[in-house]
Image 1 (spheres, one colour):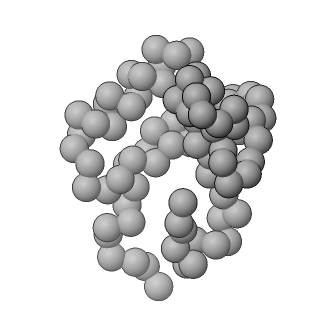
Image 2 (cartoon, one colour; image 1 turned 180 degrees about the horizontal axis):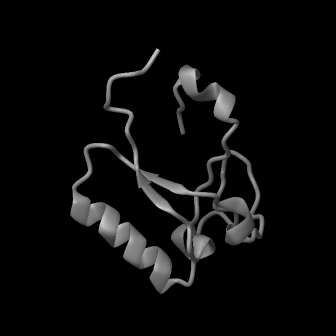
Length: 88
């Protein structure tokens, strides 16, 4: 869970989603041995857009689009342009 210092201004929140967490870690009732908690969220309010890696194939972006729609969401999926030359 690392982020480049140059993107610190985004103030983004990163999350890990795990289904059936207790079954994945039967010896520990908490799926977060180092701390943390499970929080219910409304993804429509939490997610503004999804960025796909710039080197990802076109089919991958299309797949992400289809999966999002299959689950009833409409987040825009954008192919990142971080691999382009910066404009100063």
